[in-house]
Image (cartoon, rainbow, N blue to C red; front, side, top):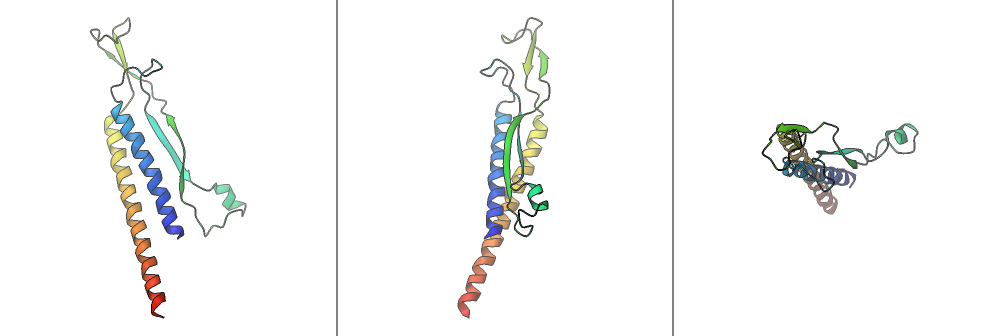
Length: 142
């Protein structure tokens, strides 16, 4: 059942990544947040569920991978975009409005990539289930 658990961890991580991307796209024109600053796009950090050092130290069996996990969600460090809009009520004293530093094309590309990774995990999960079912069927025949 290890293969199913790995695929499920991948599904969970990619679903969370998709939620972060959707939040970024939804806030593409958010000038002010509750703190008064422009929205800062977020990135989901993920990686192996087991620390690589544990494999090297022999604490974890190399033959039993554990899937992936979310390490956290952090804002990007890109400076906000300043646009000259003197008629905007949110403009500063110089007439500039601060928008999030969000590249919508990059976000959409990341969304497509995330969807493909999610689909690959679904295919792997289904393939694993079919193999387990076939093994059970073969076991019944004997």
